[in-house]
Amino acid sequence: MFDLLVTGGTIVNHDGIHKGDIGIRDGRIADTGSLSGKPADRILKADNLHILPGVIDTQVHFREPGLIHKEDLESGSRAAVAGGVTAVFEMPNTSPSTTTLEAVADKIARGRDRMFCDFAFYAGASTDNLDQLAELEKAEGVAGIKVFMGSSTGNLLVDADEALETLFRNIKRRAAFHSEDEERLKSRLDRQIIGDPSSHMDWRDEQTALNSTRRLLKLARKHGRRIHVLHITTYQEMQLLSDYRDLASVEVTPQHLTLSAPDAYERLGTLAQMNPPIRSKEHRQGLWEGLRSGIVDVIGSDHAPHTSEEKQNAYPSSPSGMPGVQTLVPIMLDHVNRGRLSLQRFVDLTSAGPQRLFGLAGKGRLARGYDADLTIVDMKATRTITNAMMESRCGWTPFDGQQVTGWPVATIVRGHEVMRDGEIITAAHGQPVRFQETLATTQER
Ligand code: DOR
Image (cartoon, rainbow, N blue to C red):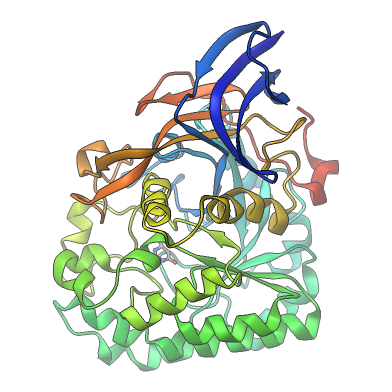
């Protein structure tokens, strides 16, 4: 007897793409294959739909505590499941920053049964907590340590050589890096042109990213540590990273794969402003080549909501960042439909990739015994993304008005049918993601 039987869909998993049913019991996948006729409490018919392992967004900013006029854990997670995302890794630049065990525990308590998807939190590195990182990275629900090597939203920053050396000595798990060169950012502040957001990519130029990533890779090599380099934006970094595949993993965002300068700044103004910036078509092309050649490990949305009012400030008083957790799946499925990547590569980037890099316990694979996290999509549905659809508190998307083909139609989180046809249809049941490296500190499910 299954709790839920998903029938007639096309399963996309480690085994290829094939028709099949999925039986779910007690929140886990109990069986896959030809299961029609088997008894089940509920049946979800998935004829003409594709069933993907739950999409995991490994970089979001949900702003709670402290900045909840932009977003909170509940609203951010509504946006996630509305967009077919079943788990998120949330960033530490909240207010206060997530730099202590208490701050991590507080976020977990706020998220449990209040977030609609499952969740993990990065613990932020700061110059004050370097001696506590070993403990922090082992705490329940922690995805790893996040390091801002260049200043962005919030006040987290670790950029001095000595501090970074200490950091690498103190951690063991893979740590995630925002890689921009702080010295260069400070020395080029005069490149910001008031009222011209396109000067953002001149201020935070390609050398700013490349210098920092080169330095980061050398440090990681010296200490033999695994690093995850977030939101890569230049073709030069892609080339460099291909020489460090033993220790460095690579993220790109849907917006850097989709938008480019000068068009994005002309159309969107400060809405296109983010760190690291949207760059030229040549760089966008370099990211696609990195994706095709296997250098890119994961797609993260870097969902970074700010209100429309805040974004209306004249550059550079406007904050950097754009929302994206709800549009990751539709934007990338549209790229699939345009032949830019395969559906299996999409699954590799959004489920298997996170599983491999972060050692997820029981997630990231559509196979018996794993958590029953499913992203069910209609590859033929053509829809227009609009601001009105957005569940995020910020209420806007840089993709407003964009027509896409490929759409998430159901989200299942540990067997709970959370979203159907854009409606959120259950209470929140979100729980911390479990990691193989820290199972000893983690509650069993
Ligand atoms: O543009 C950005 N916004 N980049 C970041 O690194 C942080 C983010 C935010 O939190 O707003």
